[in-house]
Image (tube, rainbow, N blue to C red):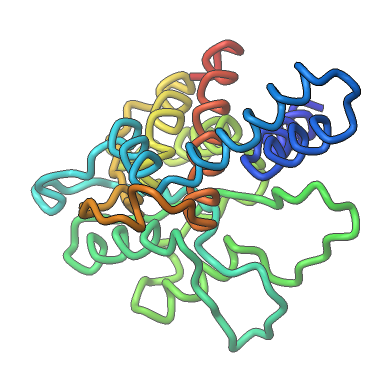
Amino acid sequence: MFFILSKLLFYIFMPISLITITLIWGIITKSLRLKKILLCTSLGILLLLGNSTIVNWGYHLWETPPPTSPFAQRYDVGIIISGGMMMNRECNREQIFSGKTADRFLQPLRMYKRGLLKKIIISGGDVSINPLNNENDSETAKTQQILIELGVKPEDILLETRARNTRENALYCAQILHNFPQLKTSVLFTSAFHGRRAIGCFQKAGLNTTLYSCAIRALDMGYTPDTLIMPSEQALAEAYQLIHEIIGYCVYRAMGYC
């Protein structure tokens, strides 16, 4: 129930959802005062969350920084949290289409090839709330496939395919590591905007792991008229992801998950 409710909550707070709700409400309401407030609110949300500069500042403030010396230490295991690493589209066994967060498996691959990781855990199950969803190959399986093709030994990859959220990623990975006591040191790979919630959950699960932030979204962006003034659909999408994560972090803190 928590999983479904959290998904629905995030859809409600999408920028485009907030704009649509306030716009439609403002059009149909009979109160002139409320109409003015709602239409101004709709426009304000568009100008604020569609502003590339403001959204980029938000990411700079929220994201956890990447390691300054990523190859300075060896670890027994690298833990990859799945999510967006592979494109959600139909494909056959020979087709692999990487997604926006492919950096989550590229960074541990680099460390493994340098001999800095002994094992790799890929954690993540089916996160769809669509009962008709029937993917033949999960993101976890596709990530395993591409890592093997790029030189990782099959016996060095451990799969965790039950987790549907960050808390379950942490709990199920803790169970795996409990069964492999020789794997004492670990490093956690996830997107920088997700780092706060991820490291908090893994620490709550009793894992003293090191965070490796990757898939950075904050840009060193110049101040030009198009980024300072004109709303952008890309900015709205980025704002949604940021709002999604901040809400998720607050809910997890309130529930005691991180």
